[in-house]
Image (cartoon, rainbow, N blue to C red; front, side, top):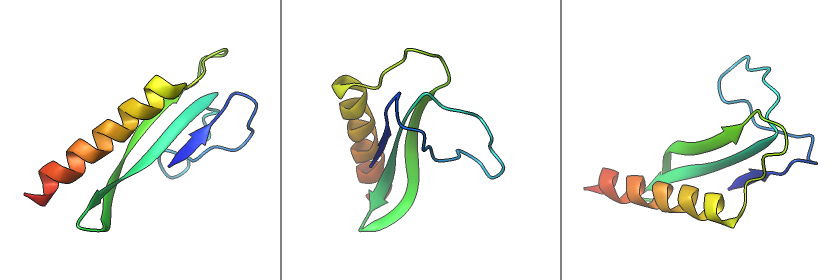
Length: 72
């Protein structure tokens, strides 16, 4: 899982050629039978936005849910 904080200058482009400067970003892979089949992405371009523990857990729950649904 990738978590970008406000002071971190790195970010993951959402789509090829994306030049958007994200102030906060969480990217987590969706796993199905030990294979990455997608990702859940939560990001913001607004200043003073922090991704905290609740956002981290929400993304984690979403990836777990999608992974389990796609295994069936």
